[in-house]
Length: 135
Image 1 (cartoon, rainbow, N blue to C red):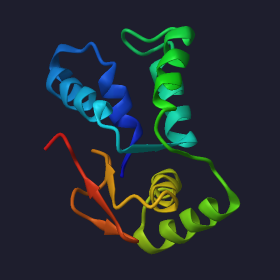
Image 2 (cartoon, rainbow, N blue to C red):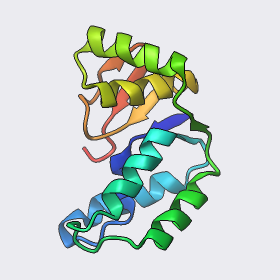
Image 3 (cartoon, rainbow, N blue to C red):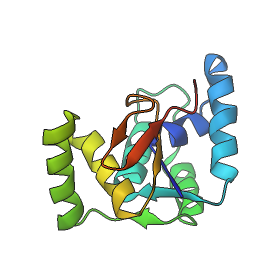
Image 4 (cartoon, rainbow, N blue to C red):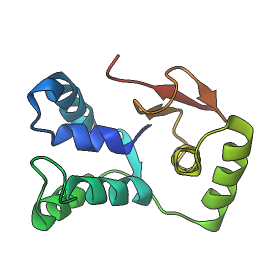
């Protein structure tokens, strides 16, 4: 199972011409059955996809419908254990708290890979390898 970061979801709905290749990659990834997400990733998607300053922003209804389709994947909730692990990861790996929380959620679900363009490609953090699918 692989964990998907927020940017994968956002690229999947991008209408920007210069992001076409990334959109196609993200769409392909989302067709795979062995993905995992977290509540944090879904929240970040909603906040970014519907923000008023976003070009071609999504309506509330469209964003909610998309989130509903992604609930077919395992979704990690934020728990005290995940938060504690995120704090440890932040201190050990030098990540922001929010990136550490994504790594902690991936670990909690047993994911060995975290697909993201926001962290160092190839880096292993606590047994989770970062993979940039857009390289």
